[in-house]
Length: 287
Image 1: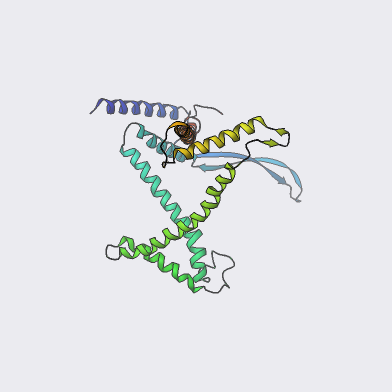
Image 2: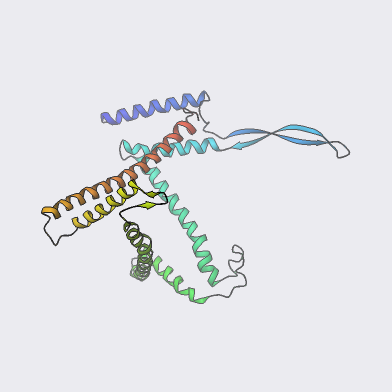
C-alpha cells in the first residue's frame, strides 16, 4: 500500500471519528429519523359552543431531514474525493448523479413533451384524465409521422435495424441546426453588431460623457485590431503588424475574462457545497 493511500485512510478515519463524536454529543444533525414536536394553540369551547379560551397542543411528526442531510453530505464528500484520486466512491456518486438526472429528464420529457404533443394529438380520449380540455378534440393523424420517427430512433439499440435510426437523427440534426441558425443569427450575431456600432463620442442626458466616450473608443479600437489579427491576406508588418499584436492582446484579455468568469462560477459552487457541509451538516458555522 502506497504512502499516499495510508495517509488518505488515516485522515478519513480521523474525520469519521470526529463525526461520530459530534453526532454522539448532539453537535450535528442526527443520522436517523427523529420526532419533531410542534406546539399550536387550539380554541376551547364549552358545552354551549362558546369560545372560552385556548390550549397549547403539542404534536409530533417524524422528520427525515437528518438521514437525507447525511446522505447528501456523503455524496458531496464522494465527489470531493476525486481531488485525491479516481476512486470507487467518486464513481458511485458520478454514476448515481448521471442515472438520476437521466431518469428525471426522461420522466419530464414524457409528461411534458410526449403526452401533450403526441398522445394528446393522436388519442385525446386516452390522456383526457391527465390533460384538461383535450377530451373533445379531434385526433390529428398527421402526428403519426413524428411517432414513426420516434420509433425509428429506438432502433439504434438493435444491431440489425440500427441504420434506420439515421433517418431520425438526420431530421433532428437538420431541423435543430436550421432553427438554431435563425435564432442565433438574431440574438447573437446581429445583436453583437448592433451593440458594436456605437458613436465614438457619447452624449447622454447630462451632456458629454468622458468615460462613455473612452469606452466606445476602446471598443472600436479593440474590434478593428481583433479583425486585423484574423486578416491573413496581408503580411503582419509595420503599422498593420502593430495593430495585429494589439488585437492579440484584446483577444487574450477577452479569453481571460471569460475564463475568470467560469472560475468564479465554479468557486461559487464550491463555496455553496462547503457552506452546506460546515453549516447545515456539521453545525460548525452559525448563521
